[in-house]
Length: 90
Image (cartoon, rainbow, N blue to C red; front, side):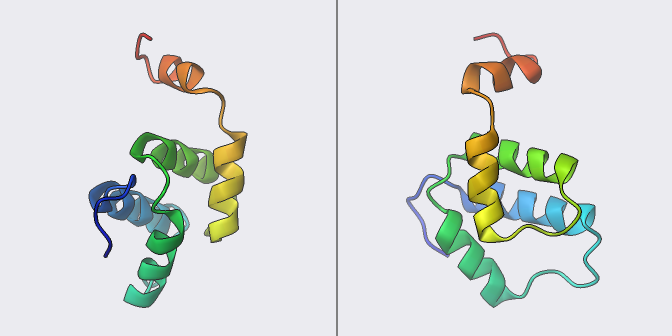
């Protein structure tokens, strides 16, 4: 995978695994699919990606497309509100 971008591979893999479990995929994504998703989503910041995954898990019925991640990012409240929801003082 690529390195030196905003979205760390560790955070990406942890959240993709959460999505696979949350949407009860019978098989994990293929290595090629993981590469495509990471390549298209690598400019997300770690916290924004994790928050988008939370939103998707809470609201969606099916495993998300790449476009859905981008829409979820736009739908997120401002950072200070997300941090307060998590109990982090700003």
